[in-house]
Amino acid sequence: MKDSNDPVEPGKAADKAVGGAKGPDELRRQIQETRGQLGDTVEELAAKADVKGRARARSAELKGKASEAGHVVQDKAAQAGHVVQDKATEAGHAVQGKAVEAGHVVQDKAVQAGHAVQDKATRAGHVVQDNVPRPVRTAVTNAVQAGKRHPGPVLIAGAGAVVAAGLLRRRHNGHH
Image (cartoon, rainbow, N blue to C red; front, side, top):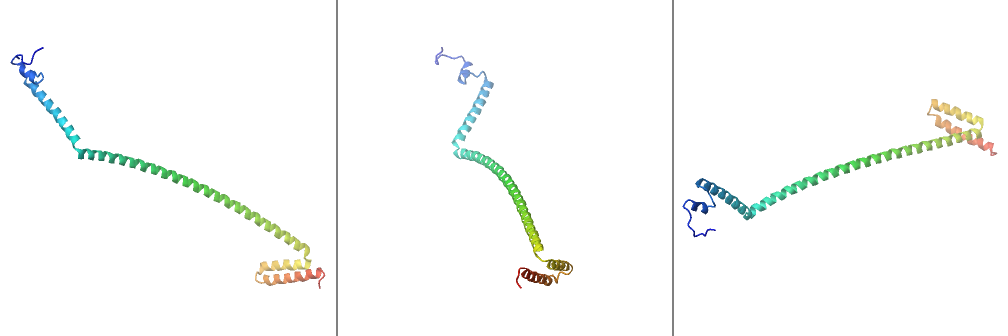
């Protein structure tokens, strides 16, 4: 091992001083490389020391993330809105179906009631026909036929027939 006080050969003194450069061109290249590394290091240190700049960069990063989150939330809300709209449409169709069903039930009940009334009227007609004397039935039948031809006087004829039927019934039951 050589001591740092040992004499050095004239051409090798410069080589040792710059870390082993073998000539002025290589020395210039090493200097350029070192300057570039120092520049990068200075930029990194400056960036770390620039609190405002780092805060702006972080703020921009957070804004980007917030915007992205906002879009995700907006997409989810739109999807939820579509689901709600679909469910509302389904419910509307179900209600409409139930309303149609209920309408049919009411219609069927009305038809049944109409038939019941018609049956009772027919039975009442038969009872009247069986219990009212023939001359009164004939008078009523004639009055109905006349009413069909001339509807105005029907009320008067009908009233007369009712009075006549009442008198005949009274006489038939023994009241004079």
